[in-house]
Length: 109
Image (cartoon, rainbow, N blue to C red; front, side):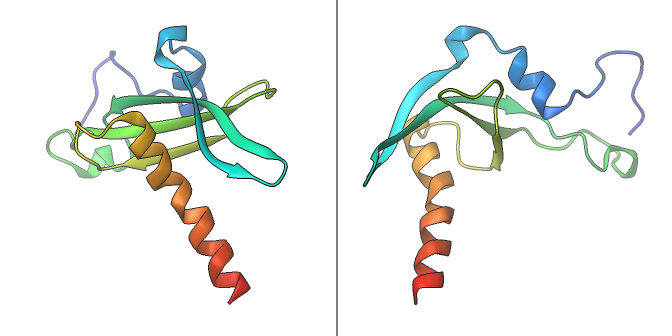
């Protein structure tokens, strides 16, 4: 797959920093001992550009979930998700954050 002059791929940070304010939503994903864990999240459909030179047609669109913790100067965490278009954003956040719970529980075992 060869690209012409436009559009060119952008970095994850560039994508996140150029999203409009309406793309971000504050969500709390769980309660913790020092208060609720919350951040702003954006979910956008993107077409990953990695391995494009090896493709004959563009890859499928996927969700890009971006976390921007309160008090941070820029987003800090990015996930790709192949969940269907219909799950609401809070569900996508819970699924993404579940990995941390699973890893912590595994360590405690």
